[in-house]
Image (cartoon, rainbow, N blue to C red):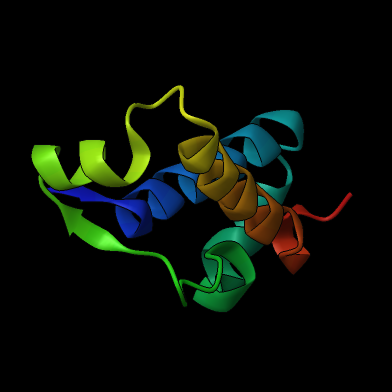
Length: 86
């Protein structure tokens, strides 16, 4: 089934890759000092286990504003993490 928790991990990984691409010198310190809570957002309230019918009932499609609102919430959670603050 579909999982917003999995999607959060995907988005956090993408954010980390972008940060390291922009600042490759941080890779060395990251390897020594990685802390999950600085790189992975809080997952409270994010749902998972949606089968296709349940997803369609709840969100319609991936272009539905309800789905996009959850994505925006996930992106905002990641943006607030210490590792990704500008």
